[in-house]
Length: 393
Ligand code: AMP
Image (cartoon, rainbow, N blue to C red; front, side, top):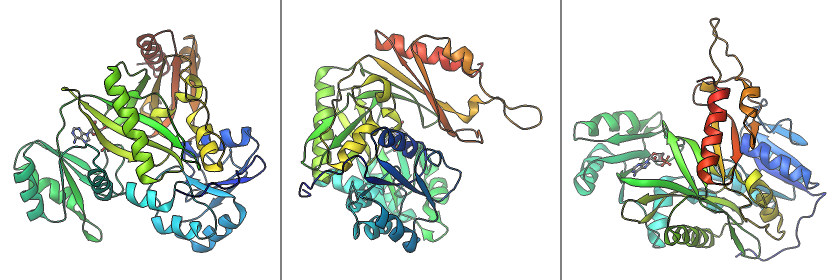
């Protein structure tokens, strides 16, 4: 465990690697608490740009840029994991990086992440790591079909993965995923899990090793992209307790200081299997902004600054629905019209979050809606109605 150090207090400068919506919401929480925020992004026109005190634009491999940011910040965290671990290591030589670059290194690659999970006895889908068509054929013979083939690195929202249903799919899947611009890629073949539902658990671990876990959320996906998250997840206490305990143990085993999210499959026979770990705040945790005593973003600030963690108590059942670019109806000239926000906000107990992305593209996360209600079923209904009204569909 990192030795507890003096906390970084308001007035200090927090750095964030990445300028997307998670970085923007982190910056809003941090600035509300009196911190300065500097973000590094490889694009200037990013959601965090207007929310931070300074945006450094450049590639994450620019060592001079990293050194400049390290010199200005008291601590650095990140908002997405597709950042070269060497960038994290270069920064960590000069300033605390939380979670550490080692956590980033393990979790940004599915093969390393799966190896970590099995070495520590955390249950996950049966898998094989493969790096050639022959190895893939042998893995299919071992695990059977159906299976899910995933690239080890740089996958998200279902990108870089294919379902294998029958033997003829093997060659096609290898041709699509197995060979990248630099030659054969490492892939992970997983046995297909016929799950009852998917849940995720956002948690934080402070510099003193204290862990605070948010209530697990139930996640529904559409086209591999998170669609609706809801809390409470409506599962047996034994399942919730296991997911919460496993998440805490994963953060401890990884030595996370900061926030991380663990995604799980809950099988029809009640097993709780780890799907993947994100060493950062998570889309499924956005509803904590309105629904919990502390949001996941304030918790990230507290954890990386070495402050006491906030209460994760759920104040109200809640549901969050993502707003993808598809919600912006295309006009005849190829541009897109704005959704009907007024109609959505007529639904009582609904909050709108837009990330300031200028171009609405299909599948792009543009914002989200959150609803609070007396029951989770009502919250899901409200947020779905609000989104339908906004998207006129
Ligand atoms: P991932 O990028 O690994 O989170 O996968 C995206 C989505 O694909 C998951 O949320 C699941 O809905 C589905 N999926 C991934 N792996 C499996 C699996 N082994 N069995 C069944 N469904 C899966």
